Amino acid sequence: MKIKETDIAVIGAGSAGLSAACQAAAAGAKVLVIDENHLPGGQLFKQIHKFFGSRAHQAGTRGYMIGRELLKRVEESGCEVWLDTVVYGMQKDCSLGVIRNGEHWVVKARKVIVATGAKENYMAFPGSTLPGVMGAGAAQTMINVNRVLPGERILMLGSGNVGLIVSYQLMQAGAEVVALVEGAPLIGGYGVHAAKIRRAGVPIYLSHTIRRVLGKDQVEGVEIVEVDSRWNPVPGTEKHFDVDTVCLAVGLNPMTELLFMAGCTFDHFASFGGHVPLHDENMETTIPGLYAAGDVTGVEEASSAMEEGNLAGVAAAEALGLLSEEEASAKKNEIRERLNTLRSGLFGEKRRTAKNDLLKDMKIWQHENGRDQVWKA
Image (cartoon, rainbow, N blue to C red; front, side, top):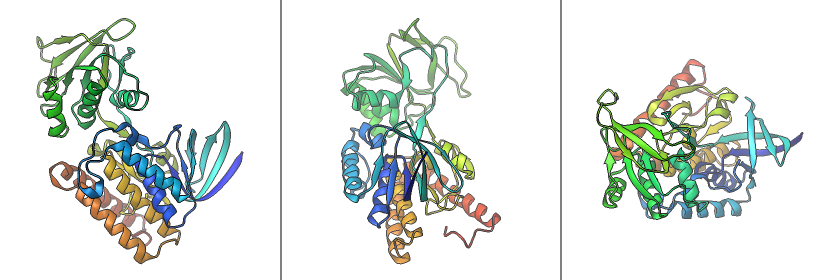
């Protein structure tokens, strides 16, 4: 077993992890970035659409271009990056169990930032295990990263931004999206994305769900059905579509396994995708020296993940004494202002409220555990 020592270990080379690494390295920290994939960048390189928001959040820039810029900054910062590397365990002292190139390593870091992101939810129904039923994120990876069309005739379940955007990108790649199905009575994503789908001629069936997928060795068709206000199927409303692929865009769930292993305290927020780690305004969890950033703290947009990564990177560097309190405070205030902007308005209100509730729970935990004066909230 080999041992690796570093100032800061960042787990996850997506938008949050890369942002955190850049901030910490810029302050002079020795940073190790670890990711299980063979390429860094996370979700950004799947996102060929232009970002919304303000100029500060690179509105009008396509996700993969933002990813390229982040990678360039990481390379120039001198961060060490381990790809095709799995972190299989973490202890309370933040030491990491790692497998790299078939060898076992123990990574000992003074600070750890977990930015492992989120995984797709699944949905069970008759035929859900047939080849051709997949997550919308998997389909997006196939077309935008691997340049492989998952199918020719596709039905999408879920009208959040993922379902809407991936549907449009599937059509751009040459597939026919025969329908988009949503169990709720309202579309879940941005109206601008839904409008693009409708203008392209794709019908959107609200208050409908999948009853069953048909086929012997692969998807050959799908049957949907209307549901009432209590989500019960309405007899006689069944509709059939000949498809070879069904994509599921039914939400994401934070990948919190390592944080559970370390003993972090959690709370449940449905609007954030489930159980998320309590953390303070510096993104530090209930384990001193262990930070979390991005979708692992609650599913939001990539822009929010990058800002949380920035915040965690600055806070970790400050805790190591690499930034003065004044320098760190100025940086963190700028980042928090940008985060507040992202969480403002109609679409951000629920996220802002949930995040404030999470911070309140963290302060309660600090008080109950006598740590009010230990951590800055």
